[in-house]
Image 1 (cartoon, rainbow, N blue to C red):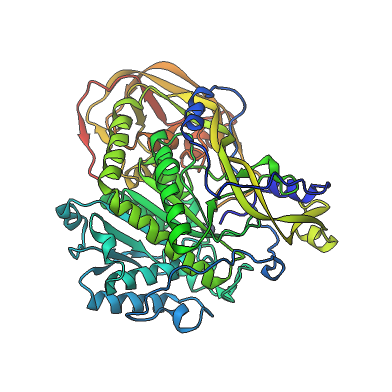
Image 2: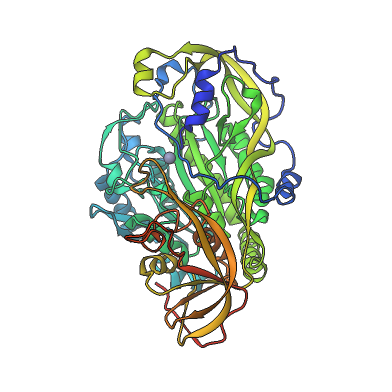
Length: 608
Ligand SMILES: [Zn+2]
């Protein structure tokens, strides 16, 4: 989940007027218009105005008591789950508790030992030393990337528990593994190989405590990993063993679709499953158009018609006191896995199940959701492979010289219908305000009266600040080993300059280096302002060339443009050259831009 930003929460809490719900919906809870025109409007709106966007993140908000939420997501149960094979912890305890790391390991080992469709590998060791299991489902008993390539089938990745307090994805993944092994869902493997990380944050999972006021189970893990890091903010800086290994998986197994499973406790509604795709303005537009135009309508239709579940795109009311203002998803920076995967030109789904639906509903509806997604991807495997290969080719051939958005505003992607409730104002108590000083006088509390809202879905990032990209690429000057190691870990192709050579380049003249007021993910985020200016430069041997003519060019631009919200500069990789000892003047940004490749010979650096 992402919770609400402080700004949004203030808007909710301060909403001093009675709720003015939007019109009662007649349309189903999926996007009702074609998103194609709306998406293409984003490019037309791009212009370089406004300040550098400051990275933000949700803040803690007071948890809500599910007992006070009427009929939260409780809808008709999905089709019966097969009971053949071993039973999961939730099945054997009547959904009273969620599985511990050791129980997940025992369950998947037992299945892998008996099923030819299931292989077990270890992604990595967690920060605290636990194995992070990778389950591989295939007709061919694939165990390695080389064996995957021999099948000529694409891989698809499901991952759960990155936030280890959000547990139903972990349970649904175990059931799916069991049901593929037993044969009930073996048809999912006709045209694809399915990779599953059922317990990605193994350390957080076993740090049990009372859950976040989800409607069961009573005990659940915590959000952070063993390093106190939110793993779903680590995709640019890559400082956790878990995400570093996951990105290595993306490099070597190259899944064409990644599904990341969470639980949301934002606004109140009746759909148990919500979903979205990458929203960063720098991702390939064709992939988001495919998701909204093809995959999501098919999956939502299957969930409703066959399984009896209603679904809705992921978000929260931008202003709960005024639902008509829109349904918003503003978590679109590259540090989030869903957006990062899209920047790598791959299809991506954020699955957020509704916190106030009871635990059994969440497990069964999310199981039906991932099943419907895998049915779609298996039936359309060839089409999806062609789509992502085309995105790779277009990025490699034509992204250099275009522009990257470093600031944006959210606009209407389409209209969406939320099956919600009428709300009343509830005063915020003095004790609550003492603990959460950003709260206003009121918050909006749902009543038992159901009400549907058809409102704009504010999930289209329109650039407000853009930077034109160089025609060739970047050069990282010697001495920046941590930055080069980060680029390699992303799988970016790098070359080392063998001999000094003189080039026409651009260097970034630093105007100001500003730091955030508080620590975030263990870092003090840095905002670097300045401008690129032409310069003739003698590049030393050992400089690292980062050519934009490669499929990961979008990731390169996000990491190396200093004003990007998730640049290596933002995350502090260049603090030492930018702010020099014993000097009050800004230092040098140790990355240059190239309009043409240097003439001198280079050596391709080995992949990590
Ligand atoms: Zn989450």
